[in-house]
Length: 180
Image (cartoon, rainbow, N blue to C red; front, side, top):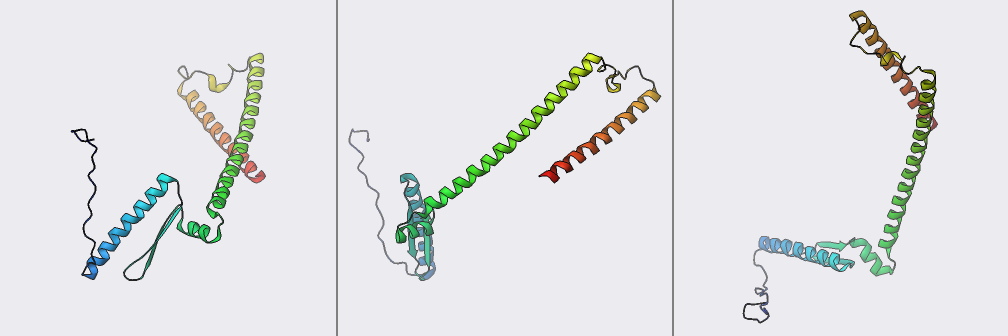
């Protein structure tokens, strides 16, 4: 509203439309106008949730098209009356749902395996606690009181343990890959 209480009735004024004299200027004007027209058509389509197709012919008789969501699909729907956009969207959504379902099943399988491993580990820990063997594991011994030779033996044992663990991991990974 204007400061005097009246509605602002000022309208946008357009310049006089006339043909450009130079062909280079004409092509430039066409390019800018076409780009603006395509932007406005796409904006209107998005805001109104409408399907649009726009075909423009240049001064050189070249065709330029713009459409939302897809120019070819909108024209095909206009010509045949069949909504190909909805069909393709349904196929995309079904594919996404199927992918998510497979991912969900894979995660569920992994979770079951992890729970099984956790249960087995808990059983091993419970058994070791009963027998009192947890504190007697060589890797639980303090290293502050060891002499140099004991530290070297400890280091070698850890390196062997690391190699054994790595080869066991590789073997299990290979077996799981072969089963898949």
